[in-house]
Amino acid sequence: HWTHLHTLLQASLSERTHLMQTVARQEEQLDDLTRHRQEDAAKHALHVKDVYARMLREQQEALEAAGKESEYAQKKALHLMQQEEERKRADAVAEVAEAAERDKALALAAARETAEQDLMESLSVARQRAEEEKLEAL
Image (cartoon, rainbow, N blue to C red; front, side):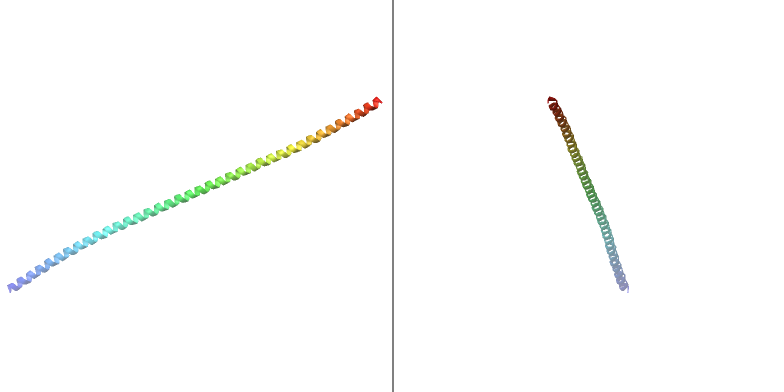
């Protein structure tokens, strides 16, 4: 009877040792799983942070590119406006020059007409004197 009791006690101790080893192994596995889960969570958080930083960087680059395009468009528009202004100025200068040429031509024509009238009057006076002198000589 004592032998049987001793065998049962031995079996119980063996079972208890086996259970404690199993529990210890399971706790170790649980600790490993927990550590892996924490590492994975940290890696995921780092990945999310990297993706977010890349998105912000790309967004900033896109904004800078858009700003440069806008600046280029403004400079181009300003350049076109300056060219248009220069063209208008050149047209105005050409108009003034044409008007001055017309005025000069009109003044020359008027001066020529006045000179011709003066010449005609002088000729007429000279003819009349010549006639008078001719008559006096007779």
